[in-house]
Length: 115
Image 1 (spheres, rainbow, N blue to C red):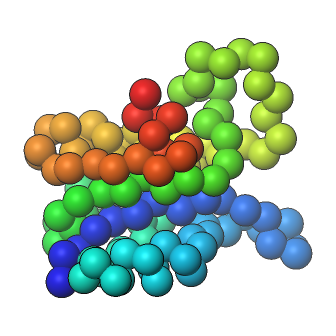
Image 2 (image 1 turned 120 degrees about the horizontal axis):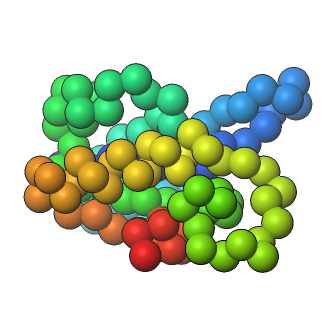
């Protein structure tokens, strides 16, 4: 089974705490292709070590939410919810993937982030 890392959106729970979230549909869909999705935490301290330890062979930047102003050229966009942790981890993932020649797939927001 291929090990593929996938990013997660940041949401607020009922206690107003920030949590990482991944829709179950991602797991169901990709498992049908013999892919084991490994969620990538948005607050991970040492991303290269995490990626090596988990044996991730590919990365998916998932959909959901807006890209923050630091990484977006669309200055007219109103930020409803700041996903700075996600923006930062996805930027670090892209740099790591390029340096280590790891394939990256962007879905919806992920494709926009790559762009």
